[in-house]
Image (tube, rainbow, N blue to C red; front, side, top):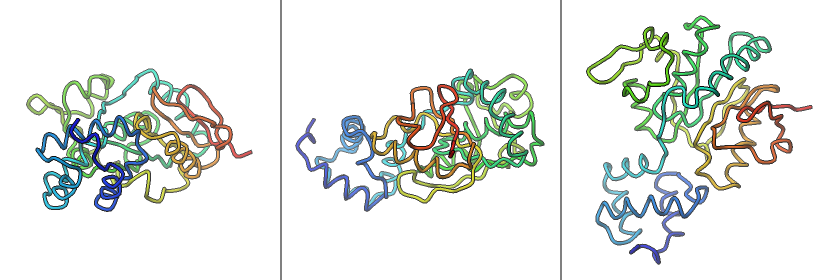
Length: 263
């Protein structure tokens, strides 16, 4: 592409100063391809010109952050894994820690994941006592999450009992109930930069770290371990794995569930 010989290293520095997003933590070939297509769409010729545009044009800035952050999300994605969470790990966590579980949905995107957690927990816990802490780097998707309006495709995996109980059809879309929305507290946060919360019993972070470098992944998984209570659970995506999990302090319980085990 036209930008092949442009100064990408300086661009990464400029983007970090402007957005606090560290592009060095992402796989370069994949990320550059995404960025170059966006630069081309805006009709600018160099990374330097694009940085100037980002600094002066709020629409372009918001588009850039939204485009870089991966927001492919749906309720109950990989239902067999959610079934394992609901039938095995949530009851285990309740037995171990009680019903006031501290749960963090990291990189929560448009809210599908934390809202799925609320519905899943409502089987065993009074819904009015459920609290989910949810974070994402992208304030636009957090705004979408707070609105709670979803397509039929997005909620296709939701069990029928929850669809009937917690969703209302609005035109061609589906609105999640205020009862579910009120149980989730959304915050903007950057997994690569910001301080992590502590003393959590369950952390759910799925299908996001696949875009990070191996070094960045290792750092995030270590920080997640520090954020968990001993014998808390980390639930990751179907294309992910925690490399060197024993060295970090995890026991692998099943393919996508890791338990903090500080012996």
